[in-house]
Structure formats: C-alpha cells, structure tokens
Image (cartoon, rainbow, N blue to C red; front, top):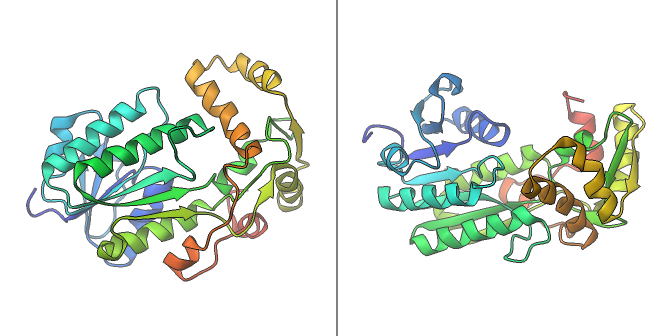
Amino acid sequence: MATAPTLAVTGSTGHLGGLVARQLAGAGSPQRLLVRDIGRAPELADAVPVTVAYADPVLAKAALDGVETLLMVSAAETEDRLQQHCTFVDAAAAAGVRHIVYTSFFGAAADSTFTLGRDHFATEERIKASGMDYTFLRDNFYLDFLPLLAGEDGVIRGPAGNGVMAAVARADVARAAVTVLRDPALHVGRTYDLTGPEDISLSAAADLLTAGTGRRITFHHETLEEAYASRAPYGAPPWQVDAWVSTYTAIAAGELAGPTSAVHELTGREPLGLAQFLAESHTI
C-alpha cells in the first residue's frame, strides 16, 4: 500500500464523494478511492480503488496505511452509524493518517434538534480526541433533496412552520471539499459552515420548485403528531422516523438558518441558491 496515493477519498460511489473524486481527478490529484465494492469504483485517472468498510477496523487500517490526508464522507444513515464512524476514525489514527476532513452537519451539537446532528457532533469529538489534524465541513440541508420532499400529490409535509434554512447545493460542498483536500495545511483545525446564499422557508421553496420544475408544489405544516402519523405507513424503525421528523423541527427551531460566506471563501464563487440550482440542474 506504500505506493498508493497518500490522498484518500471515501464515498466515491455516492453523490458527494463521487463529485469530489471526479474533480480531484480533473485537477490531476492522485487519490486512493476507499470503497466497499471495488467493482463499483469510478474509473478515474491516477485513482487507485481499495476495499474498506467503516465497521471493519482491520480492513480499514490496512486500507489507510500510508494515507496522509483523508476525506471521510459520513456513512449512510443507519442505527449504528456513530459506532461505524468511531471505528473508522480510530483505524485512521492507528494507520497514521495525518489529516482527516469530515463531512459533518450544520449546527452539529450534543443537543441538536436534528437527531443525526448529534451523531455528527460525537464523530467530530472522536476526531478531535484522536490527535489527527482535522477540518470539518458542516453542510446545511441539501438543495438537491428539496424536489424529493414532495409526495406524489406535490405536497411537502412536515412540522417546519415558518422556519427557514440556508440550504446548500451538493456541488458547492464538493467544490469546497476539493479546495481543502488540495492544500489541507491551510485548513487545519477549521470548521466551515457550508450554506447557500439565502435563508428560505419550505413555503418559499415550494413556490420556487413550482416555477423551476413545472410541477405544482405546496407546503403543508404538520403538527408533531401528524408528522409521526403520516410517516407511520412506511414501517421505518423509530430512530429513522425521528430523524425524518426532526429535520423539519430543526428548521422550525431556527437551527438551520443563517447563510455564511464559507463557500465563497473556499471556492471563490458564490454558492447556488434554489432558483439557480433548479435552472442549472439536468435532473429535474
């Protein structure tokens, strides 16, 4: 593994990690792609796929041998995600990784209204305690998800009230991550709150989605009881339903509000707002 690239990227088979990996390849940066299934790894110039699993400390330590800078994209949402994160962080430290760049969540705290924000905070704390240099990219809610919130009837339902959020495009998060990974020494110990250019309510988002997609979208505020009842038919486990509902209550509580200049600071360009994102999107 000593001859493999010293920059490692997780999540390259997913949306965010895939964007980062492709941009790094385009910039001529050799990288190690840490993937669960090598057969699904993207074929990129100067990229070496290596098998890894967050929950397997032996496999992770071997995969990370010789890595200096690591992008750790948060794992898929599961009940034991925090345990997986901690195992992987410990393996990275044991392997001698010098700098870990972790994709966290806006406002991550031990008492975040958004339940998964608590796991992100705990992961940050584990990284801080590891002795590795670190950079945290705390992205807000993704603009990319907004069109997916509406049901078949075109209604976004949730207990968000008139709360607002500074939602960010996944592409802007990827560009910010690439900036950090290409010169990590400039970002040691930094936490970047990555947002879009504006605070937006779900009601306003529905109007923009209607204009931008040609599909009539509306927002309906639910009570907490209604929110749990409307999601019960999915049969999801309680922790997942709590996460779904608390996304909306976090918006209502104002915990996702407050645009920052971090995306511009890192990328030199203004972040996309929802209207521009929809205009530029080829997936809607």
